[in-house]
Image 1 (tube, rainbow, N blue to C red):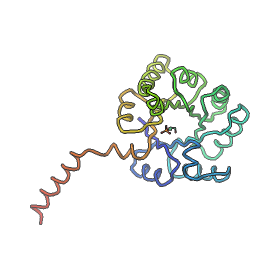
Image 2 (image 1 turned 45 degrees about the vertical axis):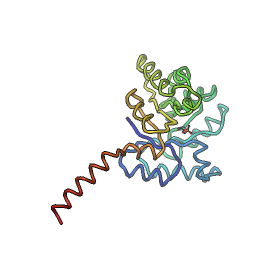
Image 3 (image 1 turned 60 degrees about the horizontal axis):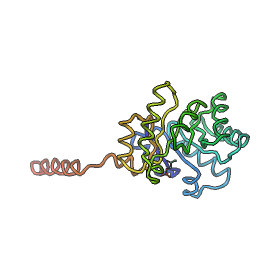
Image 4 (image 1 turned 120 degrees about the horizontal axis):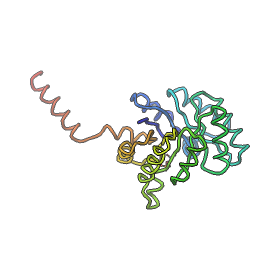
Length: 218
Ligand code: G3P
C-alpha cells in the first residue's frame, strides 16, 4: 500500500518523508489556501517546493471547470515537474479531460468521487488514480469504507489499472480498514501516519526494557 500525505504544509511533508514511508502528496485548493498560498506564480513555486521534497506523485488540482480551462491548466501544472499528477474533479468536462490527458501521457487523479458509478467512469476515462472521499461520506451517515470495497471489487472484475486512492481519511482505523480492503493508496493527514506508531503497550514495554537494563548497568 502506498502512503500519500494530504497536506500542502512543507514541514509536515518533510516530517513524513523523513520517516521513510512516504510515496506522495495530495493537495487541494482548500489545503493550499490553508497555507496562505495565493497567486499563480506562488502556487507554481509551492508545487515545485513539494516536488523537491518527495520522490514522486504530487497531486496538483485544477481550478477550471470547463474542458478548455481544465486542459490548459492541467498542461501547465504538468510542466512544473515530472512528479506532478493533475487532479481533476469528477464532472462531465473533467471526465473528458481525463481521457485527453491520458493520451498526452499526463498522469491524473480524479477527485471528489462519492459513488462506484463515478469510479467506473474515472477508470474508463483512463485516470491513474481515483479518489473516493471516505470521511466526507461518513459525515453524511454513509459508509465510506463500503465504497472502497465496492470499487475494489468492480476494478478487480474488469482489471482496471486505475489505482484506488482512499482520501478524506480521518483516523488510523480508516487507514487499516483500507489496507484490509485492498486500496492501492491512502492519503492521510500527518497525524494518521504518525498515529500508526502508537500503542501504550509499546511505550510500557520499552520503559520496562530500559529500566531493567539500567538496573544492571549503573
Ligand atoms: O484531498 C482530498 C481529501 O483527502 C479531503 O479530506 O478531510 O477535507 O474531507 P477532508
